[in-house]
Length: 297
Image: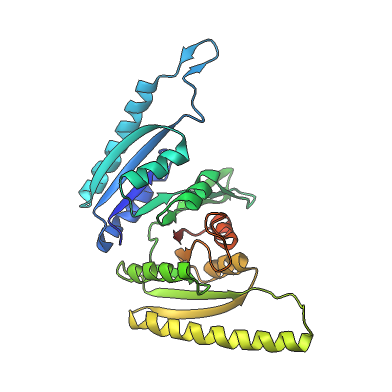
């Protein structure tokens, strides 16, 4: 299922740490990593005021040196690599490369939390998830706090140790379930399976609504119990949680409370129109979670 990974990079501080954390995916059959740097023409001018040219040769040389060092590390881990430097619009070039190179997974994005607790997710990551045809692993890190006037950042190296799987019983959730099973082969042992019951508006009498909610809860508890048995048969220690919405808040809260290392979920569930948006719940989980998120198409 996973044979090649596309890793677009701008050579941020944690770029090499991300590569180290995903090198273990070779245990799932990954054979190569495609290292990509896009010289973004949306933010790059071939000329600036006064007609001074941008030194594109120097930019390419620096990018080549970075990518070569990344490739050497991956090769030392037994992974083949391909290095590509292209010029164009960032997201279209990433998606074009993924399709051209037949990538099975795109590793993208980062999230930072500042000392005031504000969260930031780049629009580039959102656009990649929305338009990509393959799963996207959104790797994150955040600023923990300020100590004596300095901020300290943290990156999770052991990304696949403890998994939260969010399901809405949709086809996309079923596909995501297959990736959860694969993570067991990377050593993941703890699994939290979450389904969120959205709050219902009282369009009928309270008595009818309460009876419907009891029936809905019973139905979903039974589904979670079946899913728990399936995952336990694969060797997971499983905890199931039937929570109440808003869904993205419940998923992120449980992920924090259970100290999971990654969230796995489908792009969008029942009721969403293909191509319009990649799912309001998924989008908000990606935006607000401080955990890495594997988004499965």
